[in-house]
Image (cartoon, rainbow, N blue to C red; front, side, top):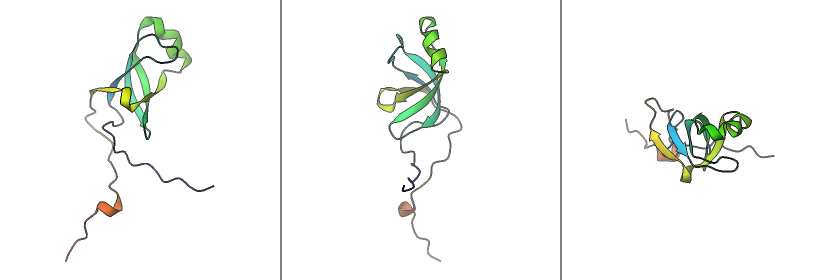
Length: 96
């Protein structure tokens, strides 16, 4: 099996951003949380605020949910984002 190259984060999201995500599956209401991992088109969000009627679903999901980037809104950007890698082909050669 071929090894998959690590993804470079080119999205507007960073680990630590406080976001709002729409209800899906068993959720009846939108929820808020902190981005724990950034995937290619999705986010792993640790749920910190939710409607009390969704508490059973939140516990069942272990306080985490995968959300689509396209449907998730950033409420507060993190003050300390993880460094982003720069692709090698974008680096300019240095002249001595």
